[in-house]
Length: 490
Ligand code: BG6
Picture 1 (tube, rainbow, N blue to C red):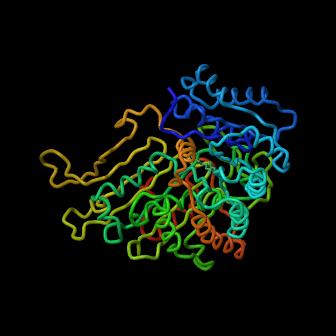
Picture 2: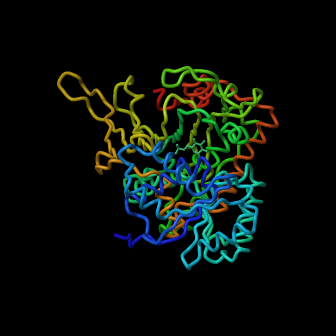
Picture 3: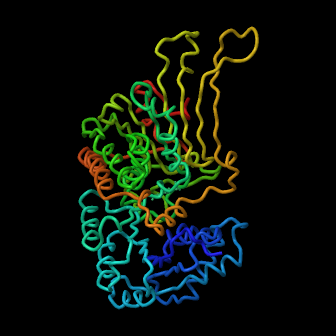
């Protein structure tokens, strides 16, 4: 049965033989095919600049990589046949006008063209200009992968070049965290439950923690990663987006720009961190040799193709303050790193203690409610509430009890959809809610640039932490200075 709800399009995948396309985008499209969520008329054009690669070789590559990335029960020859039937391959030199004429012939018709750029951001502007010159401008939506630049200035240049060709309403900037199921759920949790919204401010919340930890190291991406570092690769986008969704005011509706306007207000209210405050507010780390899954693993500087003298950070912990009425005096502690003990993304909202204390003094440290929003793995929401321990003869002994909502158990979902599945569907539908507007990207860069500039000015080098640990000891000290600890240290 053709899917009648998802609009048809021609999806042109620029960089179709690259890591992102083969690891994330093509598996996401295959899963949409498997779930029959692609319109019968949707076609996928795989564009790659591979010398000597023809369509058969490219399809064979896709088939092999799909089988590697999908769970064995997801692979089905009939789904592959259907998916393969939508695919066309074009050996494509992005800089040649002829190539775009061929693309235009292949994409002939009046369906929207979704041009997905899984390429370096430096070529976005040139590709856009070629698309317009080939007469494809009016029907094209462009999808831009992060990172858009490496600082405010370079991101402006890229955004300007794209804006010369397409209006903002047809530019979809990806931050794949916005496509994650639980991140979506943040909006429902906050704005569909008055229980939380009335407590969501400095009167009731003491602090917020956001941790995005990865177990993996650099995974063959040393060249890219070393130019970026964890601040640019993760904080500038994913962590600040999560912070915005937690901290923003309720939008008046769910229209894309209403949500984006609220997020921008948060970004503008982030307190700058001067170079004098840097040492107390921010910790940079770089992993050294250690253990992961019980196996010895090399340090960042010993990874393949590493520059042994690199001072790029693979870990950042920071205290962020928001200058507005809602959040005055409520620190947000952010922490993200590679080669941590586990893959874990979670947000913890710590509520204040009750204003008047009635129980035995030794029980006092227990006394604060916590809301834990687990983004991955085991997506779910837990509210820690205080109860009396049951039974006679125990007096008023308190216990923390979790009220747990585990999404997969509650909704009987076998598999949480990958963020890219949702994001691809949203672009096909022309819905910009889950994409980042230009001013969001630029405010986030502006705030991060002051940190990079401060590090440069102070000649700050990252502190070593062993692979498989939670980062340098200084990250523990950062939060301990405020009399607190990271949740996993409790
Ligand atoms: C990407 C970063 O944006 O996000 C990677 O460039 C990182 O360095 C990845 O590994 C993490 O995404 P996820 O969805 O696995 O948490």
